[in-house]
Length: 594
Image 1 (cartoon, rainbow, N blue to C red):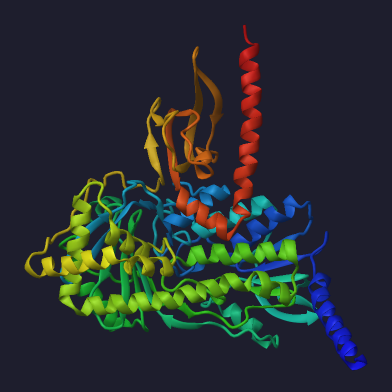
Image 2: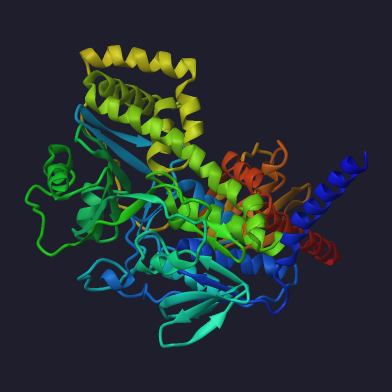
């Protein structure tokens, strides 16, 4: 009996020690945080860490180390990425208060064109709105004559600095432990000790090797080589041949999983993803008739164009965390082939929440940060299945014809359930988890309709690309409204929220004596948010005051993110509270008028 009690006492003591250890590693006022890498993962972590610390009145200085100059064109500011911000992420960032301006978005994407060996089809979503952002991660390709747009990564860094981050434009050259804390050696000989080190350098950065001698359990991700290049065609030519559509290619080319042409300002970005992309494969792709049709007839591959062959993460890192250190972005885990910026947002915010509210021990990162990484890894396994099926469709002509036939019929019928269109949209844009996409394809109605269209496709196939009038192919996201135009009307059913990208709107309340203006909303503010929480009719009318541009945030997209990340609701609730207070003040002032 005594031995049993002794074992229980020892087990309880060990448990209490294990539970107490994470609490010993917490950030306090005056603690210091270092973030190495100013790409999306590093910037998102810095932004949300400082925002959350401010909410709990915590004073923790943060140094952001980024030696690259994202305002410089070519390799000096290059981050080796296709540069697509997904539809879901654009909406989520807007709800977070991060609106991407036209000076950063080089072209808003509202549709895509699917090209296969058996034909091509234009695909648009039911909401005809530009909600995908094509950006340059740096200032632009090598040889650019005039930098007309800002760098996406540079823009994020500016938002982070505005939150209070200290930007240090020096390279980190070494790291060592000092009394259990990481100490950085910085270019120029200086060094500094930190209470938390955040590593967000990417798998292509030589800085990642600096951390190999720290005796951590961390093992870097498995990667494969891909290919990205930029061709300067001129703004008008890009608008004429590509419009505001992303052109996606599923061709029967060995080792090529996915290829895309992405219109951006004066340039088109060519992005090839697959297994160890090399020069012969690139030439095979560019010479394909389906690709040549997207360029002017007299166009040829120029000499000296800007290109690179970066490596991408295809299998996540092992244990990307330890006491006082955490790895983010693609040097930890990212989405397979798609939406790397979205994955950076998710992992960075999870790490920031852990550091502010739980602690900076390896155990706390395992409990709170690691599940987000594991969820991405599990979803990537489903993605591998989806791309295996895609490869099979590329090799079977009838399957490809069935896809095109089904999509073509869906696009021609107004109000139809666009099952295949939405599956392909989410696969190619990274708008939804691979698991959700797979479940939709297993729906009996989807399978039966697909089999029927395979049979139809054997006899007939609508061929050709349908491009709408794309003369408005700008970088402005959302939808434009003219002065006095009604955006939503009191009494209508609502199912989405709106974020003002540019301009002003007035909120009007209809009474017996007429309409009363209860609020004037500006850029960055949102309205219609009550539709997210209750299935009621709109409580007010919203009308444009002068030209205005508004981004629609889908209820399903936002609630899914709030379910995964409840902190996203904080800003919405905070804004609603402020709105109610201002509305009450406006009503009191209106009633007081004679």
